[in-house]
Image (cartoon, rainbow, N blue to C red; front, side, top):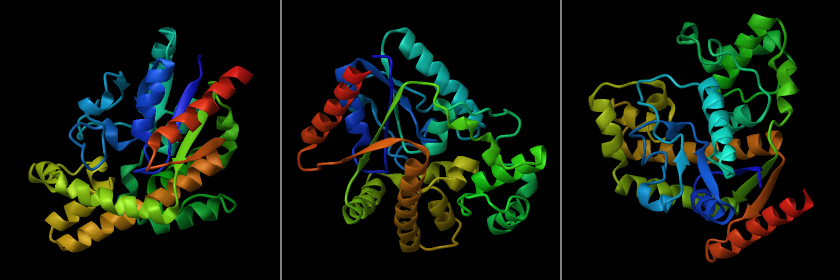
Length: 300
């Protein structure tokens, strides 16, 4: 099998556990597909897999950068493609696991990204996301984009200013470079939101405040810390902008909102096959996914 398998979905649906079982069954190695898990020390807040949970399966692109180092979509595209080739050259299956849809798409589709132009420009630091979105719509009135996603709005605005055409003209980037299976885990919305809330409480119990305080006390205010859910809210708490209860409420709320945006992106951008997670009998979920993979492999 030389397919690339993508396992995605919102937080708390079993992606990590499923990826380990798929890697065991199909002689695979796992590549991180989550932007925050790239960084060292951002472990609890990103629900990063630990050594014990890896069960001896080789994992790539986890904790490869310090939070003070720059890392862009372009960097991920290059690194992920190199890892896919490395894994496939060994006759193994590359399994990308995570929820950062834009990272995953940049690696698997024929996007052309420029290393100098794909990140947020500092010249916009004093301009609100709302104002940037208005500027973009004046230039590119038909664009469909998440107006709250600052990174995407700036990228689309810069693309138009640099090329005098919509970033949608780069939609040749919808051609897959690999034989890929997109597998999504999901569950009932109420169940998902309850699991997200419970996971936040567990992160607090496991030391999330101490993890964030480590960076805060060293006055590290880099992009992953000031934009990552669980980190940006606690920075505001430590800055005395909000109280503790409000910080936790915002982490839960923002996590739920992020899950909704993930579903929108996955459904619009990937030909994804969704599987309902059976939390009472996860082996059943594993069996359903493996049957699907076997069927696709037989057909191909």
